[in-house]
Amino acid sequence: MRDLLTAGLTLPEGRRLDVRSAPIRELNEAATAFRRAASMGTATKPRGLTVDPAEQRRFEAAVKRLGRVVGDEGVATKLIATRKESGADAQVRLPLAAFEALVRAAAKGAK
Image (cartoon, rainbow, N blue to C red; front, side, top):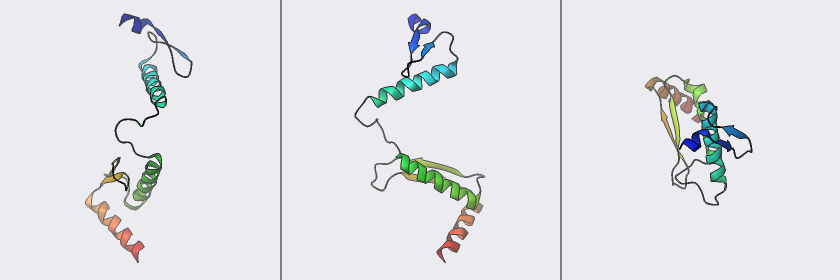
């Protein structure tokens, strides 16, 4: 354990990191770099469910449009990875007044 605390590490991008004098932020970034490098070396998918990047972009665009209709106050959104063929689930929590504004906007668009 003591050797780890006094060691100098070579990061995946080739830079040296002195563990003893490095700030916590740099140590966290180094840990992230090691995890990312380790996951790139495997041919298998990562464990667990992940949201497809294209789905994430579509969700962020929809959340931005939702914010223009109902505002951002009290609105909570979350994209949840699933095993469904239809893709990820979107979870949205909003105040009743914001929901009513959303329904009015949808009704205008449907006419």
